[in-house]
Length: 146
Image (cartoon, rainbow, N blue to C red; front, side, top):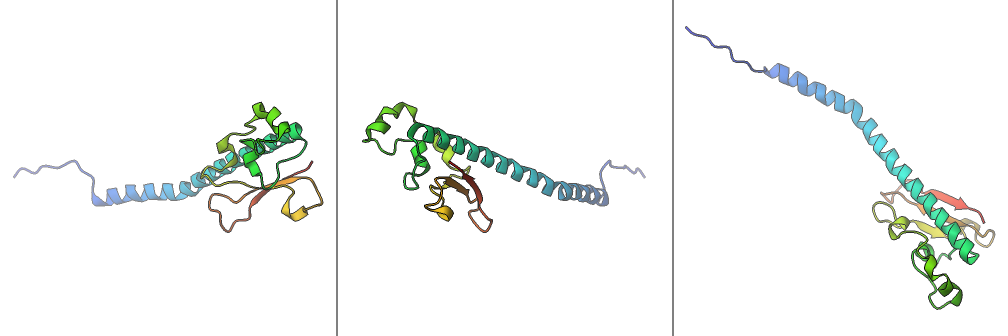
């Protein structure tokens, strides 16, 4: 009688390996997801600072921030093409890129000038980013002074 031993893994060995893999991913998965979330938040904070700088350049050029009605689109294109003062500065546009006034998902950043909270008290602006879910979380606000 000739018995041959096949070289293979048993079912128990396979289950142990799969269990270890699940355990490692279960422990590291949330940490990796947290790091990815921090990266997105840092990118959005960088974008908010870039918008703030563009708004300050706009204010230096025209003496005031764009109105709430003009919004952040005033940084991308001339909001008053018939105004001679704005025509003289036509070469200054864009102060910001078109994708610079939206988040990664394409949602617009809310802009108020003056801020809704301090209407008629201060000549400042506020930028509000609601996040990618646009839901329950409190918005990130950036208030800047004149």
